[in-house]
Structures are given as structure tokens and as C-alpha cells.
View (tube, rainbow, N blue to C red):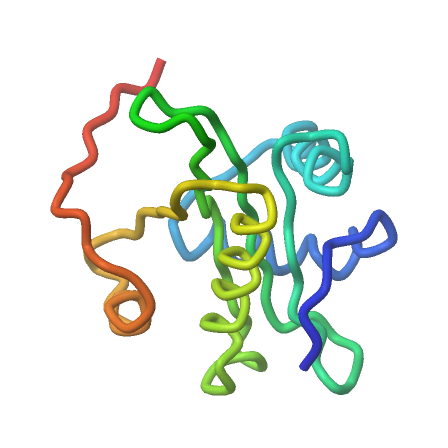
Length: 146
């Protein structure tokens, strides 16, 4: 497995993983937003990016998207790990952990103060990994969709 930046030519391989991730969370994103998000993730001028796990056979076995943003609590940015998905083929090989570590490394290069993320309370497989690679903040998310 090789971890690398998502590239413009990866759309056809990235798209099924993105769709599987959305399906896992019982969500949908319209095609226009999906395309815009992909363009932002591969535009080196954006404050967001993505890594992919390319398996030995050349297929993508996982994706991770991140974005950095200012904080009122520090002079430096925070890095929000927004989406992480590992395909069935990529599981049980350390793919998720390796993708998270790639975000940690990039956030460090960018001078970010921290990396943080959310997951659903029922995502027990992910939580088992997250408990090993980060600390729970204790915060509960509230939101209102506008």
C-alpha cells in the first residue's frame, strides 16, 4: 500500500469510495457538489486536501479528506479530518491508521495546532481505531441544518 495525495486523474477511482462513504452514513450529495468537492480536494491552492491509499494492485483502498481553518484559541490553524473511508479490500491492513497518520504529518507540515474529527457513536469499528490514535475530547456536537 502507498499513501499519496489525491490527483486530478483519480476521480473515477475516488468516486466509488466517496459514494460508499456517503452510503455508510445514509447520506447523499448531489453530483455538482461532489464534483466541486473533488476539484477543491485536488486544487493545491485550497485550504483542503486528500490522501488515498493505493493498494498493491493499483486500486484505491481508502480515502481521507482534511481541511485547515483558523481558530480563536490558537495563533495557528486547526486541521479537521472531515472524511475517512476504507474499502472492504483495504480493511484489516492498517489502512485507516496510515491515512490518519498522513493527515497528522501534513498538518504538522502546515503548522497546525491539532487534528480533530467526528464519528458517529454507532461506528464501533472506527472508534476502536480512533481510541488508539487520538484522545476523545469529551465534546458533544450540536447542529442545525440551514
